[in-house]
Image (cartoon, rainbow, N blue to C red; front, side, top):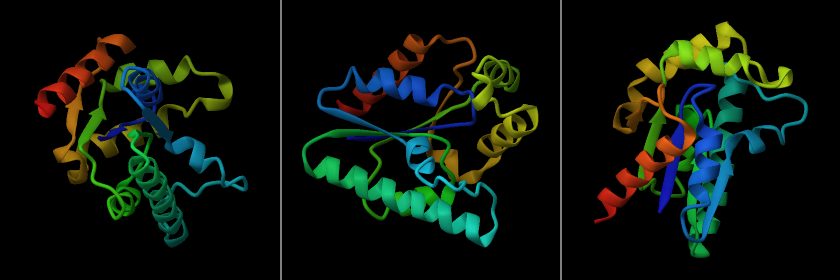
Length: 169
């Protein structure tokens, strides 16, 4: 199985994916941020031609990595702030069996962002942009939306596992 977990900054993607991977047998967790940070001179997050090329390259590499792990018999979780050009390139290599969009209320992601280590705080403007993007983009309409506003990590993981198990039966 290949599980996608995405959403705005502060939605709990990395934390949920990490805990979820530990509950699934023979599972790999591919965190998109780790691949983005391989671009040491700075990842371009905008929609400029160079930015889109970087997102496409990110998707290409995540797709290849997921494919290789799947071929070796692993279950795969792909998590992170990933946009449409990257998802389209991921899909060239693998089929996502489960797609989740973590989307807590805006006030919750703002407060979570403020609780981060100072090096990782995005700020209200970026949080609002991310939240608006995931709330309105048509691309994510076939992702299972989970409002994790009032959930702790374990409750969100349990909800994801329940959905995965129900779809597998």
